[in-house]
Length: 257
Image 1 (spheres, rainbow, N blue to C red):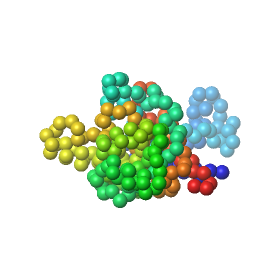
Image 2 (cartoon, rainbow, N blue to C red):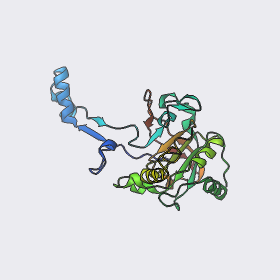
Image 3 (cartoon, rainbow, N blue to C red):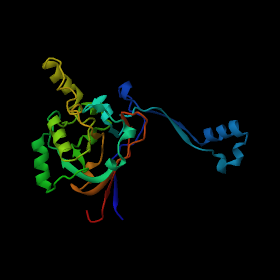
């Protein structure tokens, strides 16, 4: 049997210090509540259930499409990409989301020291791998260790626009990272953009490279994977007109890997 490695963080209520616009909120309804629902809806008493326990359910009262492990669609970056309407998450090819995976170890990179083309090429040389079209490239930074930390949002090296373009030119259509975002942390981007006069081209630059690619953000457990020789399944939820979809990202590693 192959080994299955869960690369998604759980969808769970957010820690108290989470900014309001990033919060996940879930209402949990226990078995007694389910029995009461059945009685109100169908007029059956709790005694019809084993142990007088009805159905347990949950209601997600707040979950942004980007607030857990998720896949970004090109529409998230811009309305128009390469002169065409940018695809939303429900319009992307399913073939993109079940392909061979490659892990690039960038744990030596400091926060705000973005991954360059040279970094990517050196790591591919080190692991002895040549990219092919539709490979899913996962950038391991180690920042998943801070997933529930108050400053998780501001951790990670990020990836340069040039490296993003280079990966796309190799045929890669899905790229992922185990940090909050693909670009440098937002505070660092903002500072650089303002210091440069506030024009485009610095803030969110790797997102807005005018390419129709997808990226996975907020991955976990990349350290449990070999550099290559495994499959990645990362199908996003089919949210109509969505800029992203939460995803259960799983690596499928053969016994011998």
